[in-house]
Image (cartoon, rainbow, N blue to C red; front, side):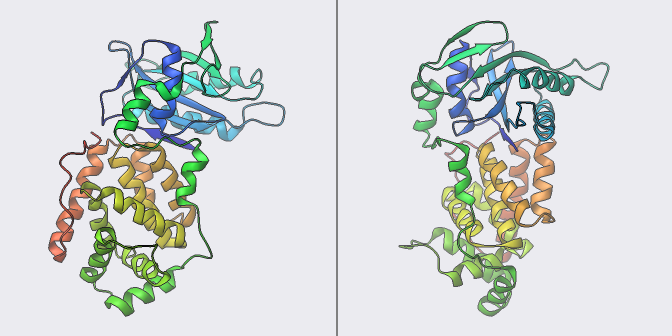
Length: 354
């Protein structure tokens, strides 16, 4: 399980001390990590932190590093290298004994950081930091033998900046994952197709209008099952799905993301995959890497063959910049225009990731 975050929306964070770095991690990730390895790209000239990646720290019963954890770490290093990273801090957040796991973890990082190109330098691991949990007063240790007490994460300048931007920092990744957890028995693809055919005669113009209306309309409660089925059927239309991605560029991007998250919770199979993929693309456009990863996991878990999710996952693994995803979303604007459906106004104030 790997979460990737790109800090393109704001100036990258400058590091003045190890304690400040560790205390800033929840704000950088969007949640407080537990039993995790967090990799942070570091610029030696500006002393700033750029992109980050987090993986689960999987240990065996006797405390050895599990094979899947090794694979996730290797993947995370590759993703950061693709983003242009050449130096990394490694933070281990875990409350278990790490005597057996730490040497193996360092070896995996060093192996993954070796360049296969002669002219390209190896990726440098600046330091390995260890803390049981990220909280005020917790002791951190580093590979160079230094230690210290953490400052209050809630008072971190990065945390304060996140709050000013209206971002919510979750107490755990599980809390964030719950946003896309399946609810109830779920509405399946056949019912969605039937609803789209009956309610809109399969017309992409009507189907896209239904999606936009659900985003812009004021409703007192949640969607009815009939509305969920219709919208799920709409997202099965490729033109509608691609146009819906463009909602992430508008002033109602947050409302669109909340709608797609609700659909993802209540749909099953391919419709759930389509809705979750839209959550992922919206999250990545706004620099929310953890939500992007969680949404992609949900999409591929619902339909492993869903092309939209697979293409996005492959692009992110290859280091796609959010600006490139914006170009794809722009295609959706053109599709909506061609279908004769007006999208909400463009968001010119919210800084796009990239």
